[in-house]
Length: 274
Image (cartoon, rainbow, N blue to C red; front, top):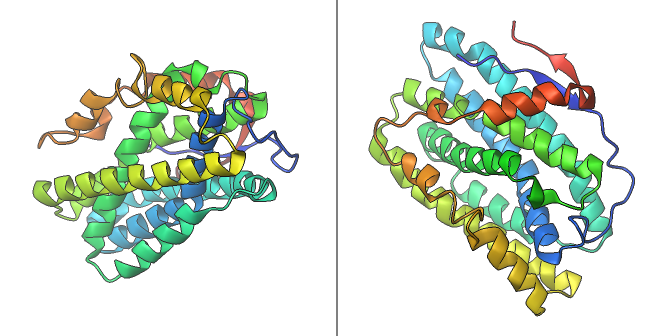
């Protein structure tokens, strides 16, 4: 079991930030903005799915996971709130969140499906975000030149994503979810997530006026496909999920633990395991 602490981040997101807030880099800013645009709706979906999955478990299993799911929901609710504030600033800058509207329609169209499908989709997305989180914590240059409050936002989110990376996976396993459906949903989520983020990143770059600049795509190439790029350096971590004996706890969470320990002054604890 994982003991999940709910934290309140002590940063100001009511004060506006620059359009190219990530080191004056158009691509990095647009890409991170697209990720943030996906979070509020996504986090709500994860909370709803895991809570629904918990309710299907026998009483002894439900009691086993209750505290962890409560912590998971608390962390995701905090992520949803803080990224809603971040996204409100993006709206003021003129960015349109088409990703959220598209994803909302997809979720509505699939709402009737078996709850195990939704928990498996959550587990798949949590694996992708855990990969991204660990990469972020190990590559501070991804936020080089950003304001300290925005670095704190993204690194805190990364640390907590790594911390609760097992919750949805374990609930899915406890529900009797099988390996074949886990892989099917993982491949589907990988395709839809990257398609959504790519389309929104392009849309953000168009709004910024940087879509057709060589410097934009040079930065994109380094960030995504360079030797230490987020895609090129994480293929093995992505493939690990395909193994039948895979479990998220085999992923190293040391950087998450270290960041939370070193930055305890950036948040207050508002909820702890019972």
